[in-house]
Length: 366
Ligand code: IZC
Ligand code: ZN
Image (cartoon, rainbow, N blue to C red; front, side, top):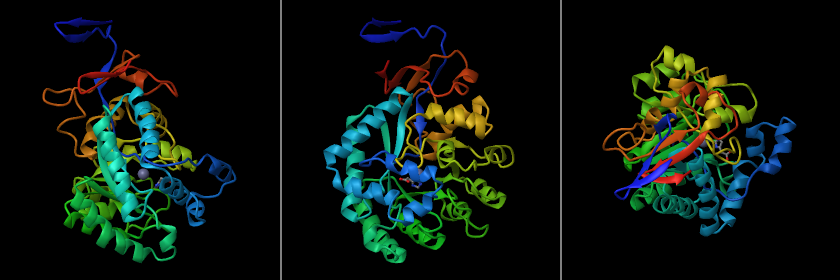
């Protein structure tokens, strides 16, 4: 029931569950085209990194993104973000990374800034020029990494158009050494660090993505599907937030899920959860799907899951001052649910349980 009293809207939630607006701390929603046609290959068992090495995967999305106008990129991302809002999300981190040239990466970051300015959702922009080696640099990842370091990072920093710099540290993509160089340059230019660590292949103990995240003082290390205890210990010792993406594990179909229980029970890590919304490994806008997968596959409790998509997620993108909890002084972001308790919220599957979503005090979905 909604009524207007003295110019203010009063909403009677009728005893339903109310939570902070959800925070999705890892997405790639600005891109052209889609990868539906690659599903057949996946069903035949062709691995993700093989599709990429063959010029598909991320590189096929790069071709579609470069071919799209600014308006087309904006419109496609807007649809995805409004869908996220209907599912309860009010703060989103978005990475560039489908441009892979200085001009194209800056163009995507401008679209991200424009989305933040024009949509009711709060957006954090991340530069991810090191998402793949583009066709122009095929076989010479070092030369491309050099371009990221010497040309892209300074340009991004000069324009003040991103808060974070992220790297896909992965076998056949960027090595730990290349990733270190890129993240150190980012640091020199005032960008905070993130890293796609141990997503697909298992990296060795000594040179793991998680270890690098700890070494460079990253704000978050994301994925961590195959991270050793040593890696987890280093994350904890260096205050790095782990961001887990169970919808990606689900879509990759290999049954490898991050060890959330060990992270929480042994290392007291502030585990955050995200959709990873992207056309290749996680085509979903729903943090509610992520909640269900965290229940079933990460064995997290309803309370841990709620923390993972609110307070811990806000911390993973340095937005704890205005998002993640219902507190005086933060943005008025909240969700009224079609559920009466937390257990129900993370147990239901594939349906939208949000009944009203409020962002900065304004009803954005009802
Ligand atoms: O488009 O495949 N893992 N980057 C790293 C992705 C997945 C997104 C994609
Ligand atoms: Zn990602």
